[in-house]
Amino acid sequence: MSESLAEQVKQCCADLYGGDWARFLLGDSLHPGGLDLTLHLAKALELDGSARLLDAACGTGASSVAVADRFGCRVVGLDYGTQQIEAALAAARKSESRDRVGFLRGDVERLPFADGAFDAALCECALSTFGDKPGAARELRRVLKRGGGLGFSDVTRSGPLPEELRGPLTYGLCLAEARPTVEYAELLEASGFRVLQIEDQRGRLIDILDDVKGKLIAADLLCGLGVLRLPEIDLAVARQALGTASGAIADGAIGYVAIVAVAG
Ligand SMILES: C[S@@+](CC[C@H](N)C(=O)[O-])C[C@H]1O[C@@H](n2cnc3c(N)ncnc32)[C@H](O)[C@@H]1O
Image 1 (cartoon, protein in one colour):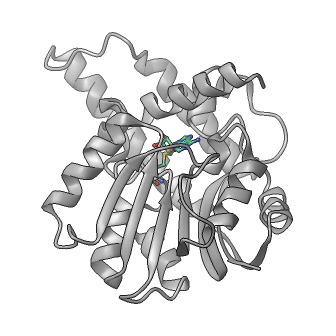
Image 2 (tube, helix red, strand yellow):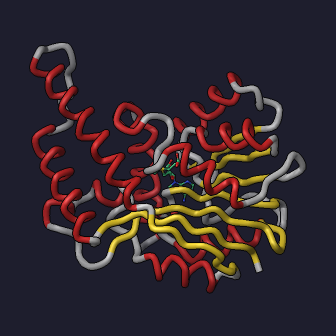
C-alpha cells in the first residue's frame, strides 16, 4: 500500500469512528465487549497506582478513563482521529481520574514516546485497521518496559469475506484487514512479545451485532416517522450486511479474540 493510500485509510477509519453514526450505533466504547472486556484485559495486566498505561488507538477514551478510574494508574491515550481526541479530553475532564489521564493525537505506527516509557499497553479493536501492522506491533513493544503487559483484542477473519461485506467501509469496520487469531499471535511474537493467553470472544461480537441491529430498526422507524433524517445511510443494505455478518460469525469465518502478551 502506498504511503498516501495508507494515510487515506487511516483518516477514513478515524472519520468513521469519530462520527456521530459510530457513537449512535456503538456508544463510547468502540469495540465488542465494551468496558466489560476492557476491564477484563486490564485486570490481566496487573496494574497498580504506580503503573503508566498506553491506550493505543484509544478512540473516544472510554477505556482509558475506565481503567484509570478502576485501577488508579496513569493513562495516556493516543488516536489518529481529531474528533476522538476532543471527545476523550471532554470525557477525561468529567472523570474522577482527570489528573491521571491525558490524550494526544498521533499514529500508532510512529509513537511519539521514548523506549520503555510505559509499564503496560492496551490495543483494542484497532490493529486490524492499521496499514503497517508489524510496524505498529514493533512500536508497541518499543515503548513498553521489558515485562510490560499488552492487552489486545480484535476482529478475526479466516477466508474471503462474503460479497455483501466487501467494499470501502469494510476497511474502517476492521473486517477487510482482520487476520486469523494465529496470525495476530505470530505477529506479536515476531515483534518481541510472548503470548500468555488467547481467548475466543466471538460471543461479544454476536452481542454487539444484535445491539446494532436493534438500533438500526429504531433508526428506520424514526426515519419512517420523519423524526430522523439519515440521507447518507441505506438502512436496508446495512441490515442485510449485518445479517450476512451474523452468518459469517456462526460459520466461524469472522470472530473476536482477546490476547494477553508480555514484552520479552
Ligand atoms: C474501532 S476503533 C477502537 C477505538 C478504541 N480502542 C475503543 O475500543 O473504543 C479504532 C480506532 O483506531 C484509530 N486508528 C486507526 N488507525 C490508527 C493509527 N494508525 N494510529 C492511531 N489510531 C488509529 C481510529 O481513529 C479509531 O478511533
